[in-house]
Length: 115
Image (cartoon, rainbow, N blue to C red; front, side, top):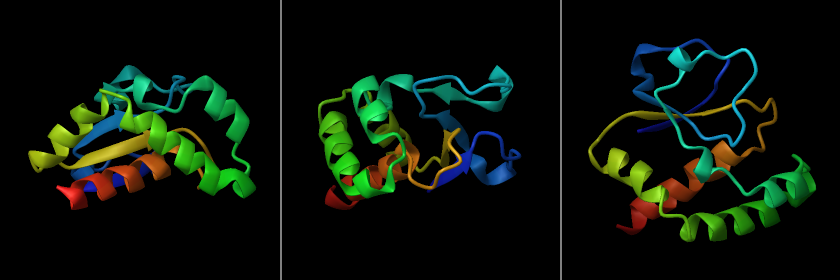
């Protein structure tokens, strides 16, 4: 199961493996709140800055981000955890519901369905 959560939200027992998927480490968060940091799975700096949480760019952002993910070998780490039946929680810092973790969850779910 893939969950989404702000890194600032309380840890819950069913979070499973807590994976930070932002390129930048969030302020005020200790290393003990995150099991794994996959900063290389986050959108490129160029894409992140271009998008800037502008909801009018959401669909285009996802398209470009999915293209980056298709070329990213780190995606296999997440897919292996999911295939093992591990619960994973994708952590993000953004207050916006339009963020890379939401897009990444959608991408992973589509990949799993294709297998």
